[in-house]
Image (tube, rainbow, N blue to C red; front, side):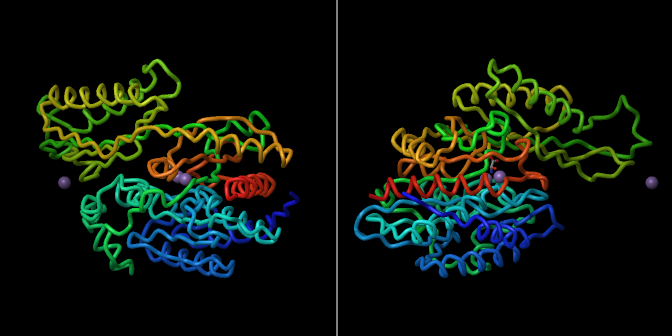
Length: 412
Ligand code: HGY
Ligand code: MN
Ligand code: MN
Ligand code: MN
């Protein structure tokens, strides 16, 4: 089947979407439920409606845009991703899956395709953990993995509760109504940049994702007496930053010592209070991200980190709190969808390989309610979550064509 992807239109829409940002270009920052996020959502809904899709926005703000199929009674297909962006990041993470998904639908429409199954394009709310420390809020609630009342009480750094923030942003209704009915979707396929260097290094156009790594995050807090940086002698100090620093080194060592290169550990947040050069820290908080494609191996690393976190606090004689934020299982792609992606690559004469995703995605939670798989495209030097993040128009075009062909295969 001859498909003509209008990648210039998609690239222009990606450029326009990137302008909805709270930091200067080329960086992008679009945090959930901020005015910038809401403005970007308005732009997306305009595009979806212009493509003739029927738009529904649910109580957590997931946008579900439906292309009715010939037989609406059949479970629909779904594609999509996220458009929220962490601080000082790039313009392709997530957005390629939303605007590329839209372009795939328009490509099929223009080819005169009338799919038997309906196809829904989803923009998931808050895939990034930036505001509520919990990633994938929209897909966790859609899949039922996160209970509505647990979601409602999540708070941001200013102590604002999720339920109040979403309602003030205009998303009414009950969070309990977000959860999909069983069997609502026949399959979910997500297009995303690789956020790693493998495809570019191998000179390949497409990655057919067979598994998604298991993400976990925890928060550790040490508190101490603090005091004057000049007046308190070293022998009298109990500086919580010393315990925090030992813990940061331990996270790195525990990930490296796991026995596999597939284990990663990061201290992405380190808050020191009162953060004054002449004041001994009183309150130190670390947010730690630990992942692995093997769940039990990740959990062993988590246990070591938690054990050592307590030891470092005890040895210093300061109070220690350890709080798990999330520890999710890995996801496995559905083999038939992976095969459909590979067939699409062959039909489009595009090179490809099977691979795992080390980043997590909404597909991780959609896998709880339907068969899933992901399509990766290369990004320059594997960079992501940085302003220099970049995927070429040709890479994006190839990803859109493979997504369109895969949806076409699955829609029959
Ligand atoms: O952190 C992740 O893997 C995703 O980009 N939120
Ligand atoms: Mn991301
Ligand atoms: Mn992403
Ligand atoms: Mn002073």
